[in-house]
Image 1 (cartoon, one colour):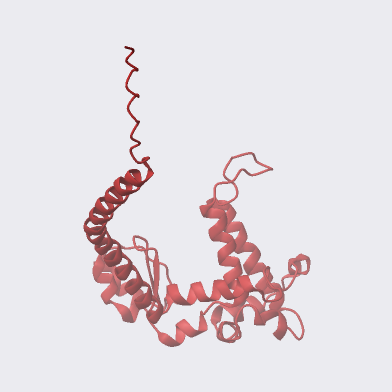
Image 2 (spheres, rainbow, N blue to C red; image 1 turned 180 degrees about the vertical axis):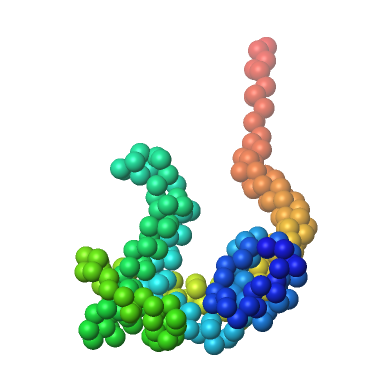
Length: 238
């Protein structure tokens, strides 16, 4: 999208949009966007603090995200398609989100669905139900939804792995966590650089000391000199 077209994004008839741009000036138009995805930095910037709370991931969502990341980053052979790249590929990722969204829609149609929808985030579901998107979808019949199993695809009891996921997510995405992470990286680099300098001087001293100790031990290991008595004088006969 060209910068000259940014006025189209503020058109009152536009309910939502996804626009791709390379001009950094689009970042300054914060009033036009709810979120900015930076492809180079692999980051998602959500402008509104309240919207960030609504979109916060539940434990089940974190499991889903972790499942996707592992399949994308790990090299594995698909037992069905034998290395054609189905698992972790673009189409595979799309199919996982289709399952996720169908399960959400099926859960919304169930009676007493608060427990089923809790895994999607109560704040998110509440905000979604007052949107134009939900009103249009809910006003129509969807008989095929009967075949979709309601409930989050990654629902289940909490475990230690869930705690690790939550801590990792908090550190990577919160402002405080990012500051701590950057501080730890800076400190580690400083320690490594300082260690190299100190290691060179200390290492030289240790090498000299080791050489001296080896020489001393080798001296102790040698047997002390033994004086061999001289042969007795030959007997002189008269």
